[in-house]
Structure formats: C-alpha cells, structure tokens
Amino acid sequence: MSDKALVIPYRDGQVLIQDRSNIKKIPYLPWGYFGGGIEEGETPTEAAIREIKEELDLTILSENLVPLEKFYNPQDLNPNIRHVFLIEFKKMVGEMKILEGKASKWVWVRELLEYIESATDIDIAQAAKQFLLE
Image 1 (cartoon, one colour):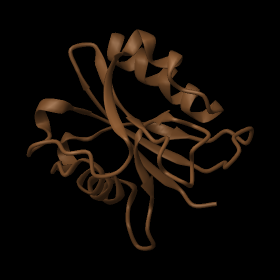
Image 2 (cartoon, one colour):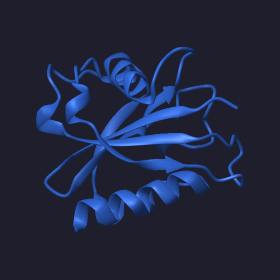
Image 3 (tube, one colour):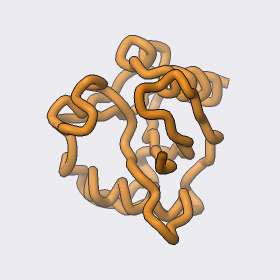
Image 4 (cartoon, one colour):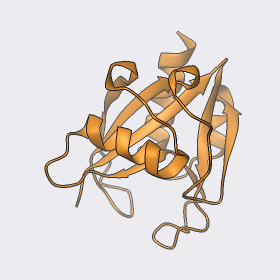
C-alpha cells in the first residue's frame, strides 16, 4: 500500500476531474482526481506539486494548496491513504495540457458524485462539496 497525493482544482462552483479510462492500472474507475503515488522521501505536498506538473503541465506553489484531509477506506479495491488538496484553478500557472489520462472535465461540485465510484473517492467528493459550498 502506498500513500497517494490528490489535487482537486476548482473554479466557480466546479471541480476538474480526470478521465482515467486509458490508464491500465485503473481502467475500472474511469473518472477520478488528479494525482498519484507519493515517492520515497517526498512529502504529500511535494507529490501533489509533481503530479500536477506530470499530468497537466501546470505549476503550483505549496502555499496555494489547501489541505482537505486524509482519507482511507478499506472497502476500496486498492486501499491506501489519500492526502487530498484543493487549489483554485486561477492559481495554477501555465497552459493546461492533458499529459496523463484520456481527458479532463469540469463538473459542478453538486454533481461530482455522479462521476465517482470508489468508496474513498465518494468520501473525498462529499468533503470537497462541503468545503466548496460553505
């Protein structure tokens, strides 16, 4: 089990999610969040910054990441601890390019649960919705 760092960009009541249907490791969960494994010696924040660069070719600063919380659900097919961060899209620097995954999509935070399937991702969606709609 390796910990993951996930980043949820948001703007104007919407969040950006990733179509992962072409990623061989996770074809059974087509929509999810940007991010991935935390490498040895990395902090969750460092991993979040690296993953966004690798997946979207965008630069983010650690002070712009808002830690949501850590999530874990043993009911998932691949249970791991997920360190989740939110970031305002306008604070991400560069021109977004999809470098990993099939596509991305802006969805209304109220509709996020229509796209998410794993137990932990559902917990994350509910927490993000609560945070962003407060």
